[in-house]
Amino acid sequence: MALRTVLRSLVYSLVLLALVVTAFACKNDQAVGLATGGGGGGGTPRTFVGVAASAGTESGAVSLTATPSALSGSSSDTVTGTFALRGASAVTLAGTLDTSAGVLSASGNGYAVTATLSSGALRGTYTGPTGQTGSFVALEGTAASVTALCGTYSGTSAGLVDFVSGSAGVSGVVSNTAGSATTSGTLRGSSLSMTATGGTVFTGTLTGGSANGTWVNGGDSGTWQAASCSAP
Image 1 (cartoon, rainbow, N blue to C red):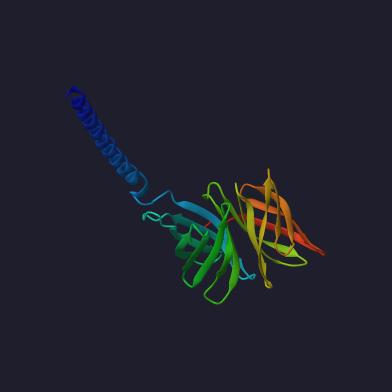
Image 2: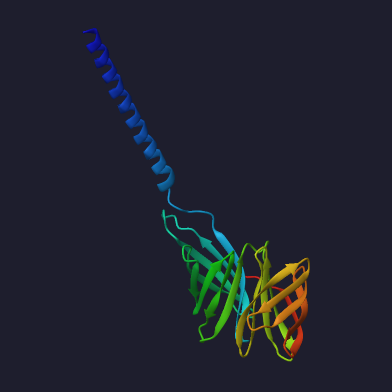
């Protein structure tokens, strides 16, 4: 009898322990579920400062903000922004940034921008209400950390040169009546160097809100200058 009583007590204790462990595990699973799945998105917005230009007819600065969705698991950020054309009214843009594919699409007032995001930089193209097409670049950051400059180049060829400079490097757009191309380069101290996709090399000095220098492409050459520009 004594042995039977001891065994019965042991079985009862084991059953009780199993119930306690099960209850604790369920509670812990619920807590983990709330921590990872609840609350949705709504992360910190990302801002981009950029420039855009078409075939020698228009250019300006671009400011974009990508705000994460409040829906859990969503990869579509809401994009709002402004395209400030030189000598014209600013254009309001709205669209989305697919964070999984790294593709941005935004439009407004007849303008449409499409770009790919890689390593903190947006690169793409845009179209305008009169059928014009151009190139677009932007770097992640604010107006305080990314400098946007808009200018012109002249010499054996002439056109527009716009670029942005920030921690992600130097990116820009050059354009003339033949079309537009993007540029990329470096800024070391005040010494600037960037190369366009067509092979044109721009070198010069960036000091504060202004820059100037020379450009060369084979037998063609000339000078360029740019000043600070920004989108409201």
